Every structure is written in C-alpha cells, then in structure tokens.
Length: 627
Image (cartoon, rainbow, N blue to C red; front, side):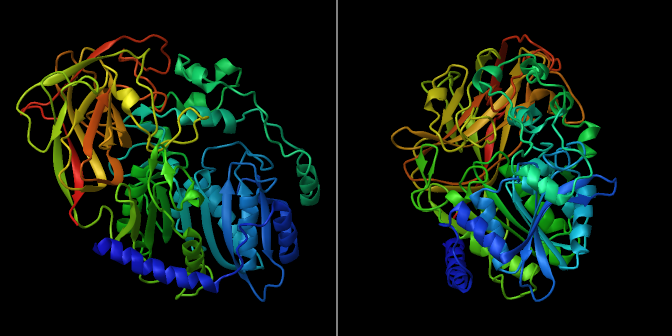
C-alpha cells in the first residue's frame, strides 16, 4: 500500500501544478496550429547545420518572437520525414514556443534534406556533439539544450549522453531500447538480438528507412529555396508495398530485401554480424563501459520491443552517472502501452485482449516541469517528491511508485517446471509449482518450416506482422511443439515486479537450436494473457563471444535473457510458462544446422527436450512483492 500512497500524493501535487501552465492545444486543427506558430515564432527552415566533416544537416528552428533574452532549446533529431509537420509535431512546437523555448528539429545524416550517408542513430558522438555546439553558440541561445524523442528520436541520445556535453543539460528518452548495445544482462545490440536470436522487425524497418540510392537536391541552395522545394517534393521514397506475411518467410534471410529488387545496403551488412561483432561497438550504440553525463526522465512501456534493456540502462545511469547530480536525477515512468503510444493512456485502456483499467498519467505536466527545472533554471518546477520509479502494475490495474528498480520489497522466488513427461500442449500434464521437481523431462519436435507463430507480447515497427499487447495465447498452446506448464489457481494475489529470470536445462538432437519461454497470466475463464517472453540460441550459452555447438543427448544449462514486467496474478488466476523453440516472425528461425542461418535455405527437424529433475531443474525466478 505504501507504494500506491506515494504515487497518489505525488499525482495530486502534479494535478494542481498543471493549472499554472498555458493553453491546451489538443483540439486545434493543423491549419490553426500552423497559423499560430507563424504568429508567435521566428521560423527558420531547411538550414544546413554544419558538421565537422563539412556535411550539412537539415534543421528547422522555431523560437519565440518576443523573447526578452536568450532562450533554451528543445532539440529533436529524427530519421523520419519532418518536412510536412503533422498535428502532433505542430502542437509540440507551438507549446514549446508559447512557453519561451526554441523548438529545433533536425533530420539525421543521409535522410531527406540532410546531406551525407545514412547511418543508424546518426553518429551521436560527432554529429550530436556538433549540433549541441552549434545550438549553444547561437546568439539567441542561453546555452541550455534538452533532447527529447521517442524511438529513433530517443535512441541517439544515449551516445550523446556519454559525451557529457556541458550544454546538454537534460534529456527525455522515450522507448529508446534500440540505442542500447550492451547493458548488464542484456546483449541486444540495438534490439537486433534477444539471447543471440535476431529480431525480424529491423529487417522490415530497414526496407522503409535505408535508401542507398536516395534522391538528393543540388548542393549550395539557400534555405529559402530548399524550403520552397520541400513544399512540393519532400524527397520521401515511395517504395512498392510488400506482403510481409509472405516475404518474411523468404530464405535465405540475407536475400530478404534483395529478392524484392532492393540495392544492397545496411541490412546486408548487419545480418551477417554476431552479437559480439566488433562493429557493434564502433557505431552509435551505447554500451555500459561508457560514462553517463545527463539527468534523464525516461518513459518506457511493458509491451514495447525493449523493456528489459531500457530498465537496465536506467539502473546503470542511476549508479554510474558522472556526478552525484546526474546519478540523483534519473527518473523513469513505465506504462502498459505499446511502443511510443503514451498519448493513448486513459480510462478503460485495452492492451491486446485485456482491459487494464484506468491508466491515466499526466506525462505532459511532468515533461514541462522537467524542462522548466533544467532549461529555464526554475529549481521548484519539478516536484522534489517525484518518485524515482513510477510503474503501472497490470492485473491490479494501478500505478505504483518506488525509489528503485526492482522495488525494494521484491524478493526472488523460484517456480519450477514439472510434469509426468507429457507436457505437450494445453492438454498435457505440465505443472508449475514452488516445490522442487524430482525427475523427468519433456520432449517435442521443432520443425523450422512450421514455426510457432507470434501472437502479441512486446514488439513494434514490423510492417503489421505482429500487433503488440496482452493477447490470448490459447491458439498457440494447443500445439504439440509447445510445452505448457500451469500452476494451480492462486489462493491469494501474487505481485511479480522486476526482472524475471528463466533457467532451463535442455538437450537436443541438433548441433544448435533455440529455446523460447513465455510468461502467461491465465484467468479463471481460461483466457491466457501473454506477459512477456524471451528466447536463447543454445550456441551462445557460454557467452556471446564464443559459439559452442551441442552434442546430441548432452544436457546443457541455459541462463536466458531476463523478462521484465509488473503483473499481479490475481486470486483464482494461474501462472503459466510455455516453452518451445520458435516465436516467428518476432524472431528469426533457427534452422538447426549449426551453420550461419542467414545464408541457409533448408532446415532440419530437431528433437528438443526440457529437463526438470532434481539434478537438472528448470525454473523461473519471480521477483515477488509482498504488500
């Protein structure tokens, strides 16, 4: 109850503070917003901001017309089309300027009207630093710059934070996991992998974003001419639509895009890497051997593509910031929405098949109080009682707060897989209990040409192949190649909040295969809501720097990439764990050959076993919170 009380008291203080602020622009039309922006702002568009190598990055600046002195800047950097602002971007610009801030948008190198060659994350340690330098040195600037954005507009901020630029005084990264290379137990290299298995969303994302043969306008044009051109030609590509439900099955994977007629580009280079490839440590990704120099207000989501690394990086920044001020000014909000869908929070919020109650959260008030503190210098703007960690507990359907992640009250409890040897499918004899198992194992056949399909969970940006969220898993659990372990109905509610570890003892007939684990909340009517999932490629069980094949019949321990959540399994509900060897198309299929996978077209069927004896137990470690 204490965690909920802390959140309630803080919410009341934010509610009353929000009345002190300006007009609500949410109901303004695009036309009205454009008119207002031109009335209140000095508008400079399509400026080529110079980088150290002479490349110019296309930049739009909106700053207050009647400023009485230097103003701070809110800086958004994006690989996406900013040439025709939508209502959301217009509202952000109007809101910023009306509050006395400059609002700056910039396209990454190699995108739209920016010069140079595209690079994922846009060179944050060079282009990012040069941009902050330039903004801080403008005569209108008070030399205080804040960065904000969601997804690609957030991910580059991590690398910039490592540079500890004196003018980069605060940041708000939202859904920023693809900017994280390695942090703690997570070695995802920008969400390209989970447990050494490639995530397929970026295969599709790169089809839309990477454009090696992009159209460009002539060099040397004035900002006025560039702005005029942008009114009728925004340089946006118009690639052929693709039926990804069919194309995603194409083998070999390395020809997924070239088979569509695409020229070779970023995808063909990345798909051949391993989790330990040196190149991952030479680009824009942030790794946990780097410093952290910026106070940060983080926004994350339970059903995003990367909740685990995001929370691990929050912890890293909290513990390893360059100064006490940086360490003490890390705050995080975690909601149950999908990727970047924070604006959709509210009453009767539905994720997948599940109503999660009233998820309302005033992120706008929190964001502006953060900026007013760090960029305007108003030390009282951001409530000193703001909880370090605010998170929505699903099932209980309430916001809670704590001073750390996982919460102080969380205690690790093991829950074990067990059966009589027939745990295959929902109709098998798989059991989940807090008692240690004595003996046994379960076996299934994994055919990579008939993989287990993805339904819900954490994902994004995949061409519509998978909708993220708390979807019912029963249509998957009826398959014989899915092992299903279910607890008895709970006699009382059980809250699980934190990192959930999965440990399996496994064997296989193949040289290499994958094992996938899913945590599920089963309601009394049988509806089985996915909470989170993970996967691991067995060849990486001894570390990502080495690949060790399996010997048929040998039993191996897999310590899998943690899952991350806050869920209350309610009284009468059951906890379920599903184990199989594929989760497609969320993850690329292991063809079970022991080869590269990316250059192979044929797979072999693997006979895979999960062991749960006293010698070889398989279990989950639940961070249980006793209220």
